[in-house]
Length: 324
Picture 1 (tube, rainbow, N blue to C red):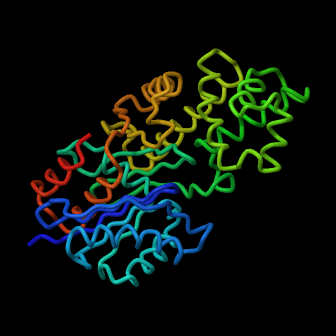
Picture 2 (tube, one colour):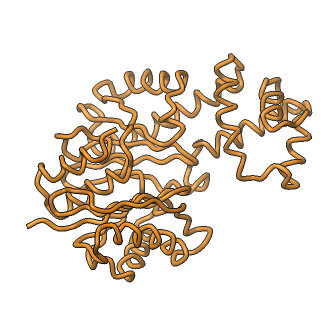
């Protein structure tokens, strides 16, 4: 007999939840705010989830489920997954709770309908992360905490690098780059000095730094060597993470999907996308590269259905609900 599943996909900027009935029908869904326990604490972060879960439960006409499958941003270490699982369990939604990093939701959502949970996903949004999994439960992952864990890039990292090169180009410490003109122009400032001052004093909110990333890609597309080198470095990082994860799972020489998700990769910038595919063709020639269009909450739901042993028909029904 099947079990109901509460699927949670919680990113830094938004949360999606879904209540999936035993037959695979989505009977409740809601969207909430971002999930940021490092900034606000675990309980306050779970309160954000609880608001969305409450609305989804109201639609579904229930207040409990058989299993909670939560894929959460900032669940970067196993100890954090355990802490967050305990916090979700304490809310009383279900005694059966599984917490994973949100990268696993992208991985599971992006697998083909009849595919087993096997492959690697790289997510490049505000940050960058990579995870791989096999049907036997083995996984490959990275801490993805930032520079202290060896990370580079993501939308936030690219924005910082672009500002760094532009500032040095304008004051003479670095070489020339068109970024010293395109970045301040985007924010309506006459120079990098003026933009730096505006960011520092709060006239341009720090939250708007992410707008530097599409400016970087546009500047690269216009041929600026510095901007192009940053885009190439991002591609190199995606490929490095992918190939290491494939190697750890003994998939480097086998046919396996490499799934690309997150706002930066989903935009399919020709230079970035092309270089990723070119390098993976050299280093993992049997890998198949695909940009994930499916919503990650689908992946959280499918992982939950995997856990409760749902039939292929149930998997197919919930997948059809989220078909792009």
